[in-house]
Amino acid sequence: MENSAELKWIFKLRDELPGFLGRLNGKNRDGFYHYSLSGDFFGENIKWGLGNAVFFLKIIYTLNSENAYQAETAAAIKFVKSFQRKNGLIYDPLINWLATPGRIISAVKNQDWEDIIGAETKRAETRQAFSALELFGAKPDHFFENIPKDRGEVGEYLSRLDWTVPWGAGSHFSHLLFFLKRSDLANKEDLITFAIDWVNALQHPENGFWYQNDPEIGQKINGAMKIISGLIAVGRVDFKFAEKIIDNCLAAKNDRHACDNFNIVYVLKYCRQVSGGNYREEEIRDFMLKRLGIYREYYHEAEGGFSFNKTRPKKSYYGALINRGKPEPDIHGTVLYLWGISVIAQVLGIDKQLGFKEFVT
Image (cartoon, rainbow, N blue to C red):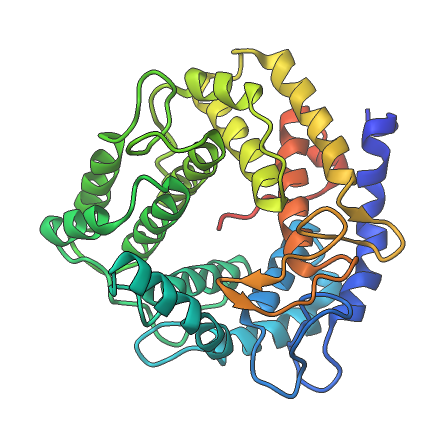
């Protein structure tokens, strides 16, 4: 099957990607990686790039290339840990500072000052850093302990999230489960169950998605991805209406950028798993093959990497303008498309031949 025209190109990626990663690797700061080849506004002279190093680690894990990159991964792990505060947070100060004006404008417009200091982004970056370290058996120096400690606090945390935007709200539900599972709270399993039950009350039987009001289909699918990633983080991948979600995913486009293109295959894979793997199986496999064709449109063969948007990187990261958006690949798009390929390969039954590994985020 790997010799078919739709698949042959993905079997070349392991040979083509090292050159791209080598060009992104910083020359003067150990563990530093550029976001893109030439479009970044900031270089190694400034302490930034936490997310880029996290993406590098996840790329190496996906490629199953840990042995070939031992020195580089050790440096990236040390670099990631260098961003940690004593309160457990691991976040990029430059990203937080650059995103501040946008948060102020949003707060004034919506009269909502709750996230003016960027607490949600700091939590998200911390989770991504922790998960990347886990892939290599590394641990942060301090655990993030600013999490709800009882049912009342969990309910308050979830109630404050904007479930009319399930992509964002679902991500913070996922972070909550991730940190609860890794905490030393005696009641953590009860709190995880409570959180899952709370969110499942938002699930709509007619389509299977978790939300309030009626967001567009892309929000519903991307929100489902975040919900499912949280369930995976705590080892409880079970939910209702999986077949309804499959129906809606197969009918959706969801291919605007790397997140859309990844999220839809991730949701399909786990809905297929929960439903038993027999529902609309041939259509799912055909969908996955066609999605690989879409993925290829984002791949820059000459450079050996993917771009987040078609032909060019995303200019901002967590609301911070970091890139000029030149026509070139970037590390963010590359990690997402490789992750997606690892998922697609499992559905198509070629994961062993390909040798990619899906990481738990």
